[in-house]
Structures are given as structure tokens and as C-alpha cells.
Length: 197
Image 1 (cartoon, rainbow, N blue to C red):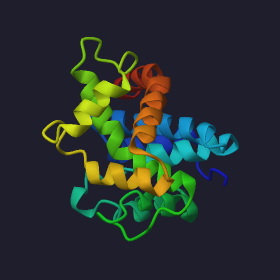
Image 2 (image 1 turned 135 degrees about the vertical axis):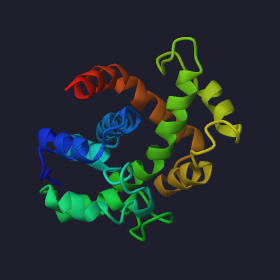
Image 3 (image 1 turned 30 degrees about the vertical axis):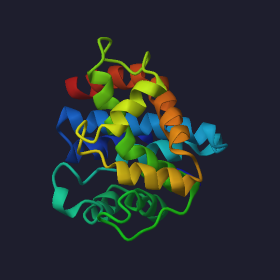
Image 4 (image 1 turned 60 degrees about the vertical axis):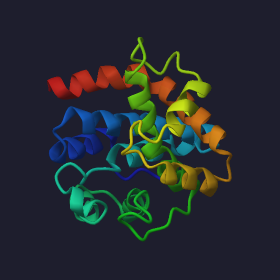
């Protein structure tokens, strides 16, 4: 796998269609999480590619929520993104707004962690530290089990993602939590830079 779009170009493309801080923060978080997963799953050489997929995965969601994963191919192709990457990006909507099934470990990792980053992010905001740095698995599991908490984050998709990867749910929760810890500071700095630009 080779990245057919630079980080700079991917970020410009994201900013073209995403203006809200919430959406940009989510994109940067998933970028960082995917970079961590590339290393963790033995695809470190492709980390830039995995990260770019994470950064661009919701490119169409802010402006075209009803056409999520359907508008994306057109926007991505116009931005110089290759077909393999477009396929991977659209696979994260499998069963919801896309018929493209995640096949590659990268696609499965994106599918599994996308919703979960939202849940973990919401749980972090409830903490005195407002951070994932001191969050433990047991407190995350409590939030996960409380269906009223971050109700927009589909537990079904998260559980399905863990199954796709052949993992216990706890493994997915723990790994994604660790991935978010690894990039939290960088995301905060980058967000300031992007929103200030």
C-alpha cells in the first residue's frame, strides 16, 4: 500500500469540506488512532497510508450527512485520492451507508475504531482531567454499557468491528484507548493550528 496523497494535501482536502471544530477533531483523532494501529498490527511501513485513510474517512459527513460514503468518492477523486484509498474510506460505512465490506486489516481497524473514538472522547470530557491519559478500561466499559451515554455511538458497530478483527470487545476497547492516549496531545496542538489557520 502506498499513499497517493500527501498529508498536507489530505488536510487541505479535509478543510475544504469540513469547517466545524468537532468534525476536524474527530478526523485528526482517527488519523492518529489509525497510525497507532498500523504499527500495532505490523503494518508500520504503511502508517502514512493508514493515517490518511483515517484523516479523510468522514470527508463528506459535515456537508452531506444524508449521502455519507456516497458523496465521498467524487470529492476524494477530485482531490487526487486513488481508488484503493477511496474503497478503504467508504468501507467504514459498511452496513450503514455503504455496501463495501471491510476486507483488509486497515479497513477493519477503521470500521472498529471510528465509532469507538467518539465514545472514548465523550467519556474523556466527563473526567476532571478532560483527558484519556488517566482513563482506565473499567471506567470505559461502564460508559460503554450505559446505552444512554453517547447514545449516537453505535455499540452494535463497535461490537461488529471487534468481531471482524477476531478480538474480544475488551481488546478493542483497550487498544483504541491506548491509541487515543498516544495521539491526544498531538491532536490538541494540531487542532489549534488548523482552526487558527
